[in-house]
Amino acid sequence: MIVASDNPCGIWGLGAVGAKGLDASLTRDGFTGTTLASPQQTTAADVARFFERARDGTLLGPGGEAATAELYGLLRAQQVNDRLPLGLPAGTPLAHKTGDRVHWAHDAGIVTAPGGDMLLVVLSGPWAAPCCDADHPRPSEERAFGAIAELARRAWAAAGGGPVGWRSC
Image 1 (tube, rainbow, N blue to C red):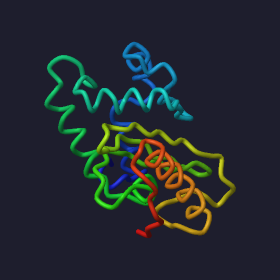
Image 2 (image 1 turned 90 degrees about the vertical axis):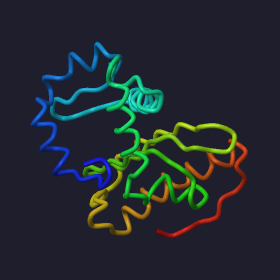
Image 3 (image 1 turned 45 degrees about the vertical axis):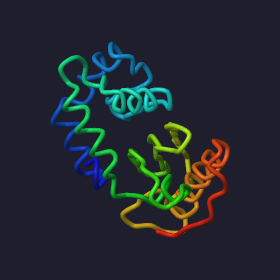
Image 4 (image 1 turned 30 degrees about the horizontal axis):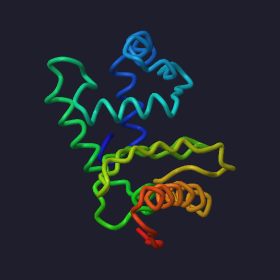
């Protein structure tokens, strides 16, 4: 679900952990814009908070540092690299997670850059149907995913990384 970014697995996982039953815990832990009830929703601020806590080892609280480090390692091993990574120089370390739903395309993560880490959260949409399905890409996904890559490219350049040319995956 994390490394290969699979929606059916994620949906099953939400059911297995109780989905909306976790909303109170999420709010208590500072994720006030996120709900796992249907329809699931989140905010860029909550996604940023997730990545910051995953990176610094505090996501799962005291005693959860090892599991949090393992989770962060999985995020660094993400295999769906058709968005943020395309806007970064080849080989740039990135811990990230993509997300797709009909009309929505996302990617968020922490880029390890020469000048320091850079947190990027892109929640985009609504895109016109038939977007967005990374498992069955069409021109609509190319446009949506390309826009996310362009934001990463601009952020890299603004952070002093210099211009990044287009690459294909």
